[in-house]
Length: 208
Figure 1 (cartoon, rainbow, N blue to C red):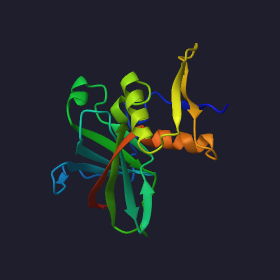
Figure 2 (cartoon, one colour; figure 1 turned 30 degrees about the vertical axis):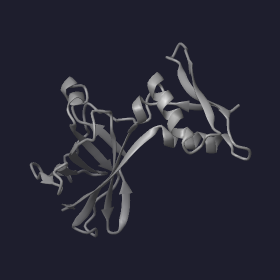
Figure 3 (tube, rainbow, N blue to C red; figure 1 turned 90 degrees about the vertical axis):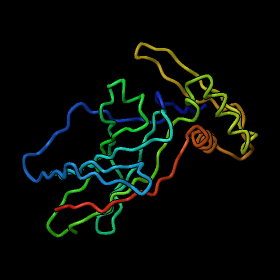
Figure 4 (cartoon, rainbow, N blue to C red; figure 1 turned 135 degrees about the vertical axis):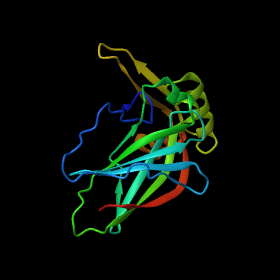
């Protein structure tokens, strides 16, 4: 039986304590706060480094859950996904108590003189564990109920293993429709375990 292992939480944040800044080719647009039409999103700054571009967005989230934002940067028609996202002040207890949280997005792109002087920064979506996620008792019940609405033939459980390194957890598929592979069933379970909110915010940013 193939084991589909889970991380401790479907949504993972890269919470870096420090960021490597380059002495050259660095430009910060500080205090260039730009609000979206619904005032839910504010662009705080954009920094251009030697090997990447970083943008900081403050977002009013749908709830106090641990949301994971996903953004893209469009440069000369090329769509670049964020390679990292870090929650600002992640260790501050007040951060978890506020629906407005700030994130630093990193895009792997090197700015050259031949590139356009501007790019389009887009916040594409927000994701969070549905009802607490697969690793909580209430979340597991809610996710199984949610999956049953569209895939009544799929049944599964989450097995938690203890070990010296902290152990782990994996999904054990108990039942599925004839002809469906374990990988296909796992993908459907994963989809049911995530809450997703689409966003349509975008802003033109200066690259030079």
